[in-house]
Amino acid sequence: MTVSHFPWTRFRNTLVLATAFAILSVMTLPELADAITPSQTAVTSITVGNSPEGVAVSPDGSSVWVTNVGSNTVSRINTTTNNVTDTIAVGSGPYGVAVSPDGSSVWVTNSFGTVSRINTTTNNVTPITVGTVPFNVAVSPDGSSVWVTNQGSNTVSRINTTTNAVTSISVGSAPYGVAVSPDGSSVWVTNSFG
Image (tube, rainbow, N blue to C red):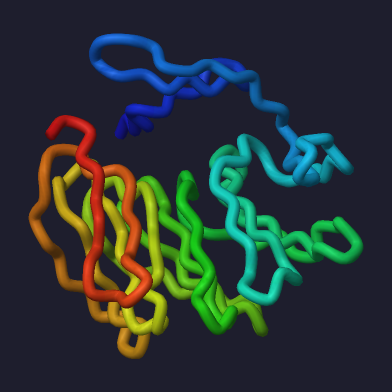
């Protein structure tokens, strides 16, 4: 199976944001996760897995979670020491990542139709089947629902965080980005092809 990460496409450590009409932005990416100060000066580089993509910070700021597409892992970085404390195997092609509001779970989209739920205390991973080619993920403010865009099936999956039950909602073509309103009443989804 070929997975296309449209509209983001990786060419030898370069990230190209493209649309059907023009290239909007090009930036070179290192194979390292960089911690950057507000002045945008790199403070330190931290080696993680192959082809790091997604990044999320725990609500208490103690951990940073990085998805590594090329090594099918997630790296956990301690923000006090800037060391990778855990490397956790997840599904194939991990991409999007989000942390629950209470910090107890990390949610990772895997390119081949699953989401990995990581228990942040034990690092146990629970795979959950969602739609085809899941990309991005967002957690509701109360932590009761996780929302996943599925580019290949033109759906958004809603995961009940108590039961891990999944319901799907049809949306536009090739859904990509997802965000939940602060009060949890609305979910916003971008569709790559309208």
